[in-house]
Image 1 (cartoon, helix red, strand yellow):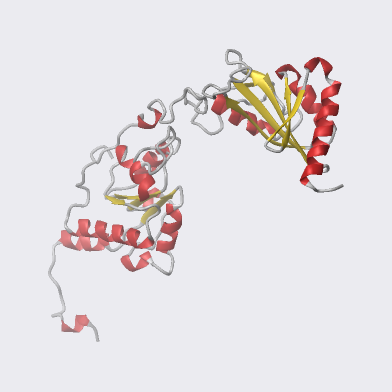
Image 2: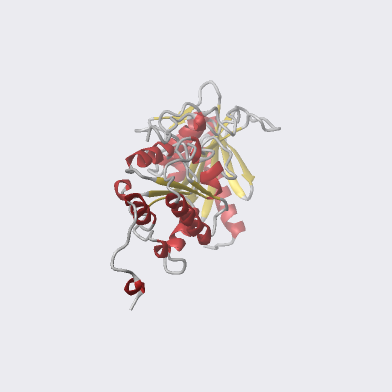
Length: 176
Length: 159
């Protein structure tokens, strides 16, 4: 097996096409972004497709995350896009799976049944974007305080927050 | 053959002056290191800068046994309740050093998670500018607190 980047990309693309063809009704779009093979899939088919990739040798889930297209010049199909980045150590190949998720119903199935690594990534994604992962055993905030009332990486959330950082009791010399 | 041989065998002082002298020369720091300033704090404490020369060598990781809280690093909204609790657990008399730009004013992190200066929620005696400050600055801050104690105003700073 060659470790040339081009060869690795070709292998990833071939697997992406092969897996995509198996899910005809999903109309998987195979492309490339920043040198990584991408698969854009409907969110209902994300988990079966990820499972097929796992069987094809993608044993490592690099990250689960999302992005918000609210203030982008080119809007996406929906407001949010969930990303799963999977890597195959044995094949030295990487695929970036993406699914569009609407604002009024931001939920997808959990990938933690396939990779345990998804547990924390999905919690972070929920914490930052408010995307809910159905079937996650413990979907709580992971970075922000439990009583934090917003999803800070959504683009309609102000960078300086909504006063959370100013909302503490003041301890003076007399009180201490 | 030291200075004491020149003395008449006893010295006169007041209890208060005696206390101040004892206090200022044995400041036990409680390190609250949350970022890169903590690295400079460690440097100030180890052999090259040697904070022990000023009586502050006994690092206490229990607030119950410490005199001066060194807040060295950025304080997030999740850490602020912890910092307040630790400050309240320290016995009187107590002093606070706000070390570095982040602890003093939030530094470059003007974001939703970061406290814009710990002095908004706990009293601070001495601020150290810098990002991060050099160990000499921390030594200077400690001497500044010693001066305050010597002048007899240990806990009279604006909250």
